[in-house]
Image 1 (cartoon, rainbow, N blue to C red):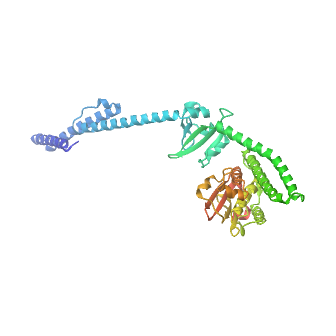
Image 2 (image 1 turned 180 degrees about the horizontal axis):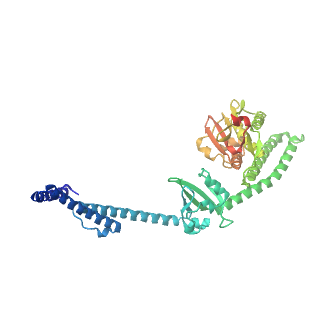
Length: 436
């Protein structure tokens, strides 16, 4: 309402009060006249208020009552706000419908969960892949419908960067990839993809590698045996000594690769967690140090630092293989005047085994791919040192079976640090350390 409207209302009220005062003076009761005028004005305002309330309760903005003065301006403002609200509401509804249409047309499944992991919404693809039954499943916890143990552990954890692969309960031969994406105030978005084809190809690759490795082992053993016999035969032409020695070296390298492939295939064929047998990590570190010092060429210093005597619960052969690969890699790429430190310690997060060297280091762009099979930072240098390119892949799979993770810190020309972080449930801590 503008200032002119307020001035007009004030003038009308002043005139009414003046008339009431004059009439009151005529009858000898001036204040009674003023009070009567104020009572009439108040009654009119209450009447206007009652009309506005009835209009609001009826929720019919198109039938807005005609009111004089400020009440008319108030009704006009309410109508404008209501129309603006309706415009934005319709706009949001259109956007929501478009969003639902687009997500419904996606080839991947989408499931929206609240912070309690209860289903708020899902598209048709998710319903088909996960066997949901429409709106009757809204409000149910997703682990009550997707009951695969791998997904339940993944959901209850906090590491969602890597999706989990599970078998579909709808089709026994179907494999699904489920990845959780947190958003908003604790809400979760579950992305579902059919990865049956990729799973079959991966299974074929594993079978091929396992079968080829086993088939190659016997011929290589025979070849290595004959080469060793020829190398020791005094009647063989001395000019062939060099080629025979090189053939023996290459045969040994191929045998090492085949053994690593068999070891990797064995690890990949088992999805279950490793058993929990106590492993004396301190004694294992001492043995690894002796193995490095027994090499023809080794770093000048090989240090062992045991900050804890806690036992590690796991499979002894696999843990020995993983730790040995890390220590051997450090020894291979550390110069004779360098040093290697092997350390074991525990804290509130769990147990930690690290191998630190002062070797040639690794450029940062190579670090994310170091655990891939046959990945080499420098192919020529790796072949010269006799590496198979499978050591860190074996380490990665061993740690996965033990619920552990591998972290790598390195700077080119400054050395590297490989750390295995084990969860606390994999530790058997002595009573003295636990008390401290």
